[in-house]
Image (cartoon, rainbow, N blue to C red):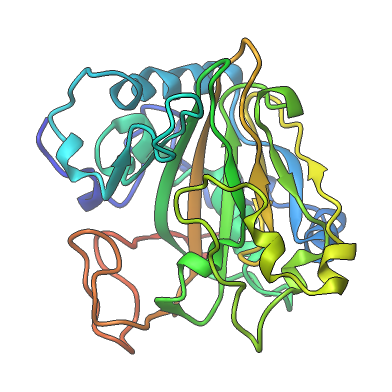
Length: 302
């Protein structure tokens, strides 16, 4: 029980049956229409990736992060915030690294329904690429007092890696709506940058939802027309690393729990000599690889 699951670079088979025949991979591919929509809007919504039964299995592991119940590997987390906002009336549990801790979250990283589409969406020229895992996240908003996540672009937090060939997958483990704090996206915002760099982070602890407005141009403000994701339980949204997104608090009677998976194309390099994640250093200029960053899919497998 003390094994660090990041040393195991294949699914354990506890959440789904691993692929046995290479012909099976192709059934998880997105359509051309879905790929075009992703590059037009910066995101793709309502992609089914888990059954309700699979979601319930994943939620069994969620208890280790929402309660005081301990787990023998919990010290392996890269980060853990029982309430990142610090406000008891706006509670947001957020953690990273749980794929190293529990079996269901480990297997989620390798889910074919996720990694095959990731291969299609990581290259704008529609070349399918080998996919490496970056890190995972959990976001949980309890009923009535769930906190929000301020508007941001993911790559603003990831500039320690280059080039920008990243992708985020947000999996709804409960039905998500505007009432319980669903993700919202700003269409076309994946084209917003500052001389090739992402927008700066305006709120590291997610307290000020609208703080991004202080750094937007007039043109960006005029185009700031968010769309609510409205994901069903077991559905995922895939979004570009520059897609501006955020979520309001949960004032409903329902929980809003989500699992997030972040990936990058094989070949991305470290751009720092500091820690990339807790316990992980790769010298600046060297390729991102090793136990923490396994290849989860390669088109050669098909």
